[in-house]
Structures are given as structure tokens and as C-alpha cells.
Length: 268
Image (cartoon, rainbow, N blue to C red; front, side):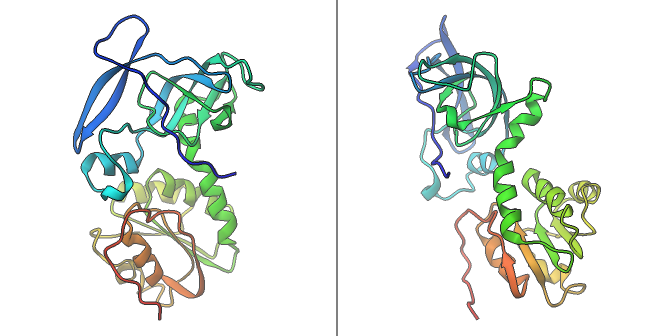
């Protein structure tokens, strides 16, 4: 089931006192302030989570740096959606979760806070011995598994994954399990490419700049393109670049490229 991202409600106060919490609020590009809000209580159909870890996604960084177009956001706003914590209050109508459970959250935005409330559907129960820091990264895993299923990778196919951030590295790990003929990855940084080789990449290429067409770098070894292309980059222009990397009858998995593009598509 697909859910729309929700931003947990906050009741704001002017000062820090008993029963309040600190919340990170982005007032404008490059400006995050600490505000105060009352610690919320779980409604009948909600849980409250004592937040322990929130990952900093590339999308958070893009918003902070002002790289996202206005269609995606409005100010003031709250960031943070890779969340792990401990359930510390359960609504009267909630079953299956209890106080003390360790959970990772999905479909929740604005989690740079001490406590948030959410629908129990958003919670994924974690083993108590599983580090919560690692649990905060689980939020991206379902989309990665869905992308892999759609890719239909086999031992006869050449696969290209563009970008080796947290999502790109997870994609590389999972794609490696399908034993493709070549698992090729690209990134701007050598240290990320080194990690990708540990995770199963068979060929790695450093792209000199964000504006460099990928095929200018990898085309000498793969002139016909790739059977599966997965852009794990945030910029919308990544989709146009990925199209140029596709072989005849290739599959383009639109994992990334969620920003607005300024380039045109040549449908021929």
C-alpha cells in the first residue's frame, strides 16, 4: 500500500518548560532554528515515538542548500524522514505495538524532534538487539526492493547504478545478489566507489562533475549502453542522463531523479 508522507502535528510554545520539546525548524534556505513545542500525546489510533536516530537524507541537504524548486516545499518547514526510536505511548485503539517496542518509521516527514506521533501503519517493529542507528536507514529499503523486482536483473544483463550515496550503495548490495554480467556504478567521489566495490560492484567509474554525461565516461567500455539503468541521484536531470545510458529494450528504473529537470527528452 502506498501512503502519502505525513508531517506530525506540533503545538508550538514560546519557551522551553516542563512538557515541551525541542524541534528543528527550517525558516529559510540555509537557516535551521531550534523551536519549542508541547510533547504530543498519542490519539486513540496513534503511537508516540521517542526519537533516537534520524538520518540526514540527500533530499534534506538539497532543501537546506536551496537546490529544490518551489514545487516541492514551502517555508517554514521541518526535515527528517529516516527515523528510528522507541514507542513510549500507545493509543487505546492500537493493537500489535506496545510501550518499549523499537521501531523504524516510514511515510513520516519532519522528524527532527524529540517526540513525534504517527499512525501505527508507519511503524516497522525492530528486534531489540538491532542497533537503532541502523534501523533509521530501513525507511529506504522497501523502495530499493521494489526497484530490484521491477529491474528483472539476470546473469545475462549489464546493470548501471548512477550514484553511490546511501540508497545507491544499498542498490548495489541488492543488485549484486542477482549476479548480473556486469554491475557498473558511477559516483563523483573515490571513497564511495571504494565502498561500492566492497558491496559487489564489478566496474566503477568516477564522474568528473555533475554536468559530465555518464556515457562520455563509461561509453568507451559499454558503447551499446546497459540493459538496466538505475539513477540513484536526486537531480531531475539524472533521468535524461540515464536515458542516454540505456541499450535497446533496456529497463530504466526511476529510483532517483525526483527533482525538476531543465533538459529536454529526445524520444527518438
